[in-house]
Length: 290
Image (tube, rainbow, N blue to C red; front, side, top):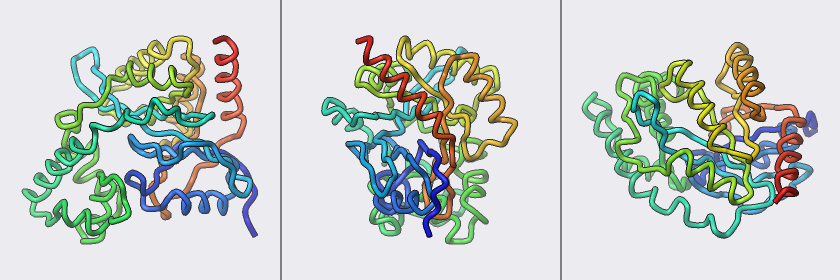
């Protein structure tokens, strides 16, 4: 019997980027888990173009936009913004990601070269062979191979030791990927009727002070457009979530719930449905003003 507990998860990946479950499989997984609303938010890719309902589950189209952000100290960061489009993806956004694939290949080659120098046997061709259904090979796939070959004990271990943002062998994506500035990204989402959400704010090699400046800048960039921040994020403990909830209140950002799910082995989150309701009401109020 299906679980009908309800709840929302507004940050999920599929094989359209670096996930291992197709859109349809992901939707089936969410139905079985008993969620009421999900957002498909693949990396720099619109896997779902229009909102839909499947067996009582509302599917919201969106994407996780990679952006470029410079700190006060002059450090260039790759910062992610989840854009939700409750009324569907506008046609004019169709080419927003068209320059990214070639840059991503160069970035992955740099990661693979560093791993090879560490004595780890892996190649780009192996990634393509191992993940033929993926439309966007990424670090997650590299972590899968590291695990399968016995170099690591888990996906998280692979990120922590070899390829993650806090790994000693981390490769800075900003040297290869020329993403749109954070400010421009937020403007694009807002101008096209979307709802921007600052994704996993503690993921960016930042001090707590730099995180606060990032959040403040993000809020400034949104202007009159309602926006959110991931508070109930799967990889953050209760302490971090409480900190983020307070930040959301102070900065007048809407809290979001996000699993950042990439595979069947990872669970969804079950955020309170009132969070999504408040986002939608804010967007409707904005639309009524324009």
